[in-house]
Image 1 (cartoon, rainbow, N blue to C red):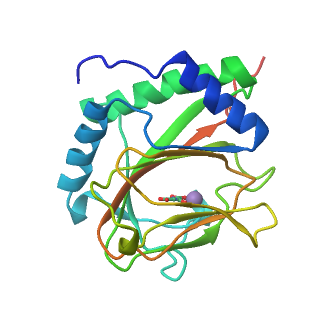
Image 2: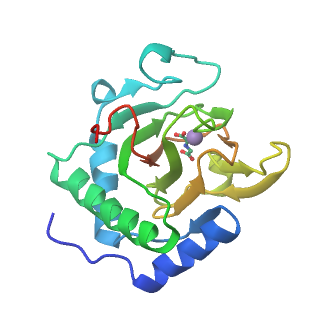
Length: 212
Ligand code: OGA
Ligand code: MN
């Protein structure tokens, strides 16, 4: 894709303020519309064989658990120009947030997710203190003309895990950011195909840092 305009500095100011004050931020729009369109076209054209069944945990802890989550995922890779354009935008985002909040975000991993009709993801945390280097979660929604009765809402809970503080419809272009260790969240059963990109900014893994 051709070079794209980055979000405005004032938009990053607003995001940083929201993260500092509340720990999360919900934007109806963040990325250039032509990028959202290209990402949607790409994810909607992937077929079942391009996706993996999503699991819980990583590497040795990885397990498939149908009763917790039912989405299919596929990692973005820099060798695809559309993926690359998104990854570049997130690199800009990472630097902009680090400059404002000194969060020390080191890198970013992201995957497309497809929830077929009937799929959900039960209440969970993306990271547990001290057990993961994921610190900031992002979700970009890629669903044109989503209706409230299509289901598939993201529910964000207060850290006590009982009270729903936000209900987010997965509308085209909506971008959600939250502290990974702080907010339990779930995806309500979706009644139609639901597409998104979930991503995580990570701290440097101390085990992989070069010895000084
Ligand atoms: C996840 C997740 C939320 C969503 O992939 O960990 O919580 O709304 N996704 O897709
Ligand atoms: Mn999650």
